[in-house]
Length: 176
Image 1 (cartoon, rainbow, N blue to C red):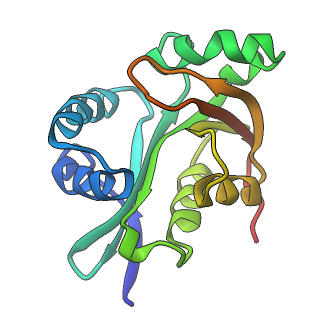
Image 2: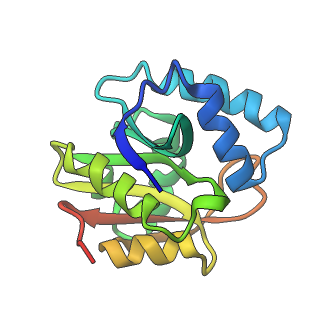
């Protein structure tokens, strides 16, 4: 496998990235359309950046994130949960991993690990935060192995059918 991890112009490759996310996360066309607008908006934020994993000319995984701001929608939703757990200071001076997805045909090969460590290695912030569906899953297993810990659990996002966990890690991430 000729895997290449490199910077990704996500605005220019949003449809290709969302095709990966749709398969990895089971999204329908309406959800993809909404996420397309969200991604385009996010990539306008100061410090937003993305990395992609390609095999040949095919994008098989991507990650994107940005320095967190308490004014961002995500932060306003998770802040009460973090505050209740005594962890709302994690919203300050953190790099948020907004999305990380690897096509199912390419999972369990270390691609997600390489993507998240590569993007966080470029962060000026001393820590990283993210949210993941609050179940025992390979994604949460990866995050725990990198040094992420649960900061709040059973976080409910509007229109999300399942609760999420907010996780945080000091940077640099632990290497395995």
